[in-house]
Length: 146
Image 1 (cartoon, rainbow, N blue to C red):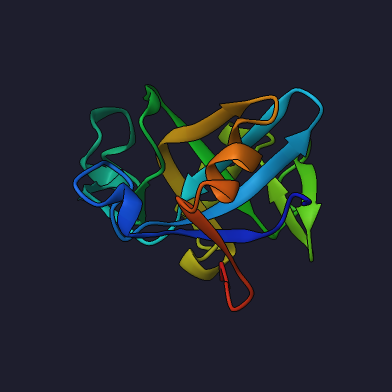
Image 2: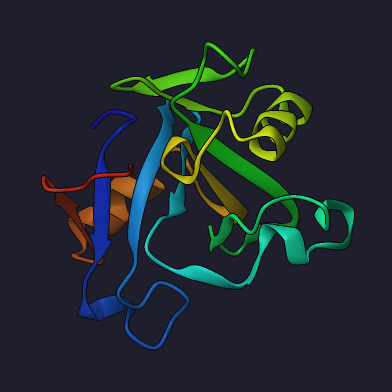
């Protein structure tokens, strides 16, 4: 398995945070895996967060149950946002968030260029593989982020 894949929850995860969830895996290595729920919008927009009240109303996504105190993002504009980590197919995780916000505010980064998440999903070494083997997740070949 590699970063850049999508997984979808199965009925084994019904009645949990992950019911009907599609995740984009942004990191996968010997330490474990990290990803974000990409198909569940958070009930508030980016500009409804006090600190970003003067920004455009970009959607926020409910990225996962871990570290819901912070915003995370993936994007496809490494030309405008320095420091992002390549994931796959011209998609980058993180980078200079101040630059991202500036470009969102001036209209050079559009909704189809960036996804903003509250929280993330994380697994320790071999946990995700075990959850796939037990049938909680299926690798999804049709996933598309932007």
